[in-house]
Length: 120
Image 1 (tube, rainbow, N blue to C red):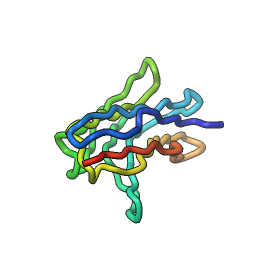
Image 2: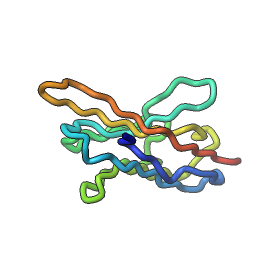
Image 3: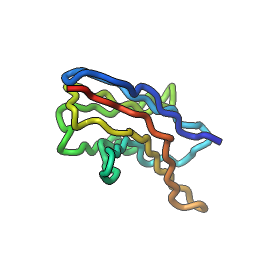
Image 4: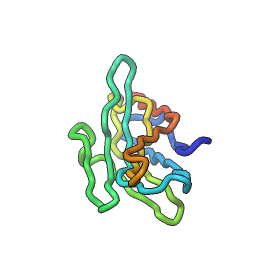
């Protein structure tokens, strides 16, 4: 069962914008954290931005001031708006959700990834 489905990636010129969206299955309960990671070729996966259930956010220094993470409770999505994109933002972007349940403990969910390519 696919539980996270990303959309919105693509090719954009430097300076442009993209909005990534991750549809989260309503079968996932006890969500405490939703966020986005990225992985460039030959590099480790790194956090881009995250949003806790309490509304706190974390944003990587490399994208600070250029990205906004948000949650749409009605649509059960977590979204990442990226502005002023740079070629170094080129990567596969992954949606990440953490749930914590009393009996199951912590579970991490990952999307399949969506490619973002920024041309110079």
